[in-house]
Amino acid sequence: MEDDSLVQTAKGLLEEAFPVISSRVPFSSHGGYPFNGQLTISQRDRLLRELLITKAVGGVLCQHFRSYWQPSVMSRYLEQAASLAHQQQSTLNITDTIQAAFKATFMDFVVVMVSRMNEKCNIDSVFVNGGSAVVDALFRDLLAVSPLPPLAQLKVLSNNLQPPCNPGYVPVFPFFHLVIGHMDQLVEQCRRDANEGADVLGNNAVTLISGPHDMQTELTTLQERMLCRIKEREEITSKERVVTFVQALVRNPELWTSYFSNFIFSKLHLQSSESVIENQIVQEVFGNLSSLDIIQRIVYLHASMAVYQLNLAKVATILRSLSQIGKIKKVCSNILSPSPPSPKKLLMYSIHQTGSAHGIQQLSNFVISALFNALLGCMYAGLPQAGALEQLKQWYRAYLDITTLPSLADSISAGLDVSAEMELAKAQVNVMQTTFSVLQCKPDWDGEVGQKVFCTLFTKHFNEHGENRVVVENKSVLPVLVPSLGRRGGRLLLLLLGNA
Image (cartoon, rainbow, N blue to C red; front, side):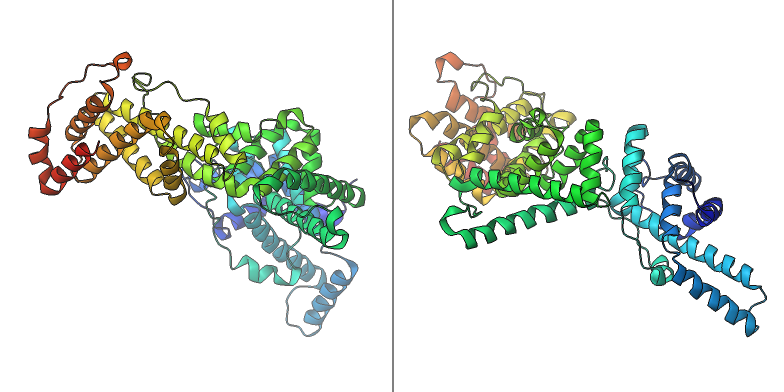
């Protein structure tokens, strides 16, 4: 379909719009962002030109702008221009007056729309990794179904713009913040439908409740209703974000990775591609997605998050802390304990067996093992070298974060009450707690003192295991340690060693 004269006129104004956008639209300067990064004015102007001209987003804006100009609106502008000319309040003729009003309105419109397009740093999505034609097309499609700001409010809106907030991650999926908002609304609508159906049908319907034994039933019911709703919307209209989003992923499955990455961070604040531990858990939670078609995949992802989000959020809190120590060198990791079982099995068992004592124990075992192996890596990484000391600080922060989580602290305590099988875990907790307490008493972060304490406890608890015997230096360090820790620290150390 060819553009009409109004669209062509608007496109002719795009070149003049660049300095207006640069001077009136506030942008951000976040490190690592390709568009909202720390750029010079000329660098950002070049990217704006690429966005609006090369990537053809400007054409979508002009088509959008054209929809304002219905006959009634044009008549009103014509009457205003004629009135000004009649009252001699303007030196322009009627045609020039209308053209000036059209141009001024277009500039206000472009300023407002560029600002809205950049909410949550959304424009960055088309420049990440050099961009792609597929992402550009999705950006244009989603922009085309975006609602227009009221024509009468353009001037006020254009003069009250704010820079985009930092979403905490670089957007890689266009208009993700809006798409996920619409998908969340769809999920809630389907949950309400299910509950209303239960009220009407009584025992023959499934009520969506949050009890652990009903989660799988809730998930299945929610998926079915979401699939029906999406199909209904596709049959009614294509001018809706949910439909545009779903159809885009059906046409271009390669967009799935970008959506999934932004989704996981948005919901759980996990970087699904960075940490090995996080990635394993994320992949396990949604491990069967690759076997589903795109629409089923979208539905399962959102339905699973809705049903399991509370449990997943608890696990994510732990994972974020563990990710601090994820890169600490795991030397000697097999000296004191065997390699921990797959975190997939341990943590997912805990998720799906919410409230189960065995599930809690499994989660505790994994967390204890991960923390202890990281501490081993710190202590045998060559303290007091600067790099090793920084690793010890990372471990300290992770241990503090995790042990101050009430739910996890209770879980660890419950797990440690399980017979002789947990003797090794008890010893590991004792070593970690004492080392942590000593470091806490040393505000100057004396890494050598922390290492001596660790080695003392290491010897006390583990050298008695013949099959795991290791040679540890500084076995008799108490005469040196107690004075160096001061009265409070020395008393604490003696108390903990005595109870070991």
